[in-house]
Length: 621
Image (cartoon, rainbow, N blue to C red; front, side):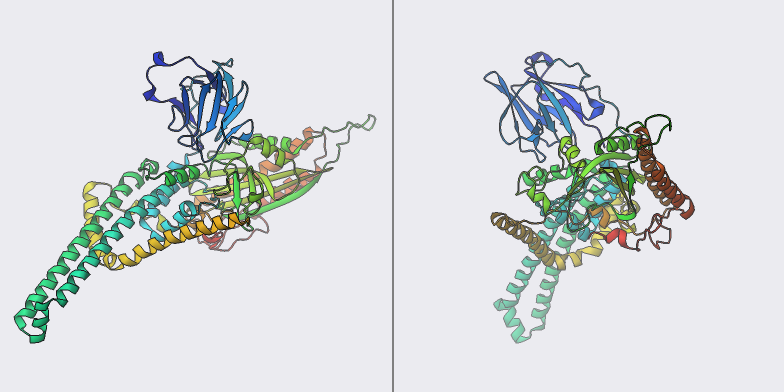
């Protein structure tokens, strides 16, 4: 994930024109940029990606919050951000005066407020560290391919719009290795372009039909038909032919224009080595707000799922292990009094696992804690659903995660997630780890999921010859000549389908609001992932399959090693955990972990793990 950056709006003027600081924000998290000072000088500071104090982060809205002075005090209010502003862990719902030492969170950035210039030294906003090795999801090949599919595959485009733009009360499943906001942006652009094309074609078809009807019912034509005058019939046939030719030429021109614009978009932004996120952003306040929300989905720490499968969007499950470890004090010297082992909490085990997994140094490894809650339960938790008319929030404070981590059960569960993204997003292996400390028992649960590469039809953009202007013109002429007649004849049906989709979305929103008014609990969980829908059911590259084996086995082995070392350091016996660790190692070595095969017969990891061919692409549809 790209680290956030701060900057001052260049339109503010030179430093000499700035007023003295009335306050300072000092960054606390992310840890890599801890200590950065953000001076507040303008009479009203707008904080956001496009604010006077620019915070460039995928988790922050364009205009996130406002800070100003009045009556000698400093006030803050949220500016309608999708993820909210938190002060001292509480969601900000109105204007609030800030006092020295208040903790404020904008997205994934937490700061501490100090009156005046503040007392904590720190680097300047320009002294940020380099990008993390984890690939930015907007620049992965998977994002590029799915953006191209939004332009080339109408059915897939409709699936994307249904999951992101049209259903505004359901949570959106995380799309690992994919920038969901950028894919949705291209889907909106392609949908609007197709809507304009179909509207023009339908208008042309209607105009031609009216002309033909008027022609056939005119007095002159009627007398010609009645008298069967051959030259009159010939004149009528010529006129009819001219109408058909004019209609065909106009339809070809409309289809060619739409096709050329599509090829320009594909060639400029979606061909190899191009940047999908450089495409224009669609207009409209509602669309911009929804795209802002989607940009935070992958960076958030909440996943709201529907029905049974909590790890929606992660692919297919390829292994699952759970085992209790008795907390038995380690025996010492028989001649001495046994030493009482040190107690520990669940959070301490999670911290040890986090540090150990980071030490692996795997490229593309992301370690974080995520909260998993079902779509019905989220409606009962105000912190997760502050606005009942909108989607659940995408992030919660760390303090809430710490509190829930200590709970042994319940329908809201935190997991430590080790997500490895490789092959430019084509391969994602995620291991979910949960530990619970009972009285005398340490329970460990792990589950590994694999997202296989995209199906071959989504890679078609790489074979298209549309990189230069000449290639685009040639391909436009060829494609328009083959498509203009079917496009003309089916345009009314496609236009009616688009209108029907809009009406259905509006009808669903009205029904949802009626249910809210009646206090009916509805499912807010995500049902599918647009990344998983496009996944293949096999690995077509041998080394990719080997990497999936490696990522899964290395993380599982590290978890067992860390638990054993943690118990050893705290004075507990490790005999059972060592047996479990040996069993995992034997499984890895003797059974040759199979995450898939080139022929596509199936996907499985470890003893007792089975998966049917075809599950990868349709497990959560």
